[in-house]
Amino acid sequence: MNADLEAYLRGPAPVADDHYTNLQRQALAEVIQLSAEVVGPLESRIESDYEAARHKAQDRFDAERGRIELHRNTRGKEIQDHYDDRVEEIRANYEKQLSDVKVDIQYRRKKVNQTAVELEQRAEKEHQDQVLVAEFVAEGAVAKSTQRRQETESTVAGARHYLDGLEQQAGQLVRLYRQHGIEAHETVTPSAGGDYASQQALAEQHLATLKRLWTAQVFVGTRPALLAAGMVGVALILLAILYGLKVPGLPSAQIAYPIAAGIGLIAAGLAERVIWRKAKSQVRQTCGAFQNALAGARTALEQWCRSTLEGIETELGSSVQKKDVELRRAHETFETARANISRQRNTSLQEIEHRRVEAFDQLKKERDNALNQAQEQFEQERSALDQECRQRLAEIQQRYDSEMGECRSQYETSRQHLQQRWDEGLARVGALLSRASELDKTFVADWEHLIDRSPMMSDASASAVRFGTLRLDLKPLSESVRARAGQTLDTASLMELPAVLEFPRHCSMLLQSGREGRQEAIETLRATMARLFTSLPPGRVRFTIFDPVGLGESFAGFMHAGDYLESLVGGRIWTEAAQIRQQLEDLTGHMENVIQKYLRNEFETIEQYNEQAGELAEPYRFLVIADFPVNFN
Image (cartoon, rainbow, N blue to C red; front, top):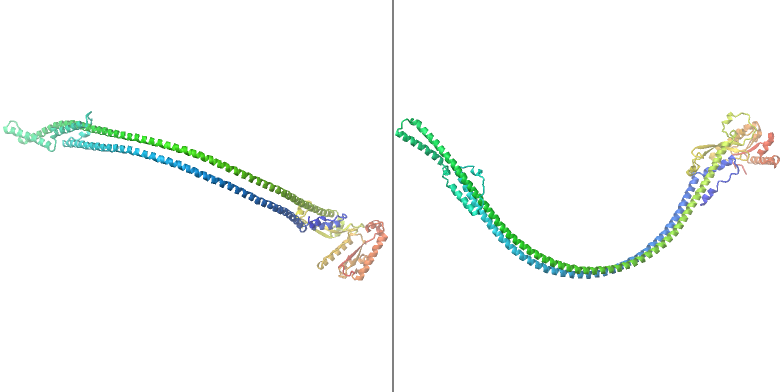
């Protein structure tokens, strides 16, 4: 606890009694002591001391912890570096041995694979030779089949062309015979059975028959017109013969010849119609037979072509099948050889792999054992280091907690003592307010009560005489103090308390002021003197007035009281040093007389004497001094 706080906590001084003046003096002193100007620095000092102590403890803790951490990091790095070096050495040795094993294994694998490749190449060559032979034989068969197919297709194409020519000839004859629509309406029924040659010969025979039909040939070209003209000519010739024979009953030639021509035309038409029908029937029959024979020839041709091509395809398929069999046999032989080679290679590689795994496992086991030993040693050293650091950290943490607890305890103790000090000061202010409310209103009321006061004054002595108003402003109190006061004090309002002189022990007053406050001090003295005149029983006040600077002007108004009783103001106002000295001596002598003659050992104060003296009561004598210590030696 700092000296300022200790000095602050030593106050306030104990109150000797409960007189209003003492309470007022100490309450005003407490208002100053509880103000923000006084409390603020103390609170700040407590807080700063607390923070400084905390920071000091924290800094010491951080420094010690830093040293521990530095030691931990440094030693830990040494342990880690040693462990890393050991691990690197183990792994390097492992990698070297592993590399040697890998080189050996790689050599063995390469040798096995090389042998297998050579065997596979030999088997592949034999397989390729077999495939070439089979492919050569198959290609010869394919070439022969292709040639035969081309020859067959060429023969069939020629036959088709020939048949198409026969069909065109038949069509031309039908059109020549003017038998339109016969081909479109014929239903072709291919001749059953027979080969292509017989069907072709039959079609040629029917075509020849079609060419020789005389009934159809009648209608070729202009033959129908010639036939009609011939018939008309015959009729006309016969009529001419009849007219030449002069057969009776014949009509005239002009009539008969046209009729004969008409009859000839009709006869020609009828004859041509009969012949046309017969020709059409013959042409239809012959064309149908021709078409059937032609269709049979086509069918036979297609069958021969199909059977021939199928035979070629069959022979080709047999060749291909034979080639496939040879290729499959060669492939199976090759695959068997490859499988045997692969099996032998796999067996050798498995043996090598087994040897590699065993070597790797052994190397890994040795490496892991070495790493485990290094790890175990590393963990032991780290554990020992951690244990040491934890122990040291626990020690400084315990010391830190103790120091922080002590700081907190001192802080709380200081705050508690400070708050107790505030409570005592607030209690003094509260006691002043309570005591002020208990004062006799007759003696501490303001000046206005004199207006309504009865002119007959009481003979009772006043317990207090008001000489002014004390304005108590609690706003300057510290925020902490006002919060501490709570609702017990109204710290927001300006309080007005009577400023009094208490009888008999607290009725002296000293006013100190500078030059600029002299007039106010004089006015306060005059007001106090006026209050004493009006508050005490008549004749109980005697004033001895010193005014060395004002030469009596400051209190000249009170000289009117001497008109009634000169001893009230001592006859005059004293200003000279000798006068002041004499009056002080006279006043001292009077005091000696009162103490020896009246008080003796029976009364402690003049007030006690006056209470039993009645009309013989000793008046109160007041010494009024202005501008002290002027003219005082």
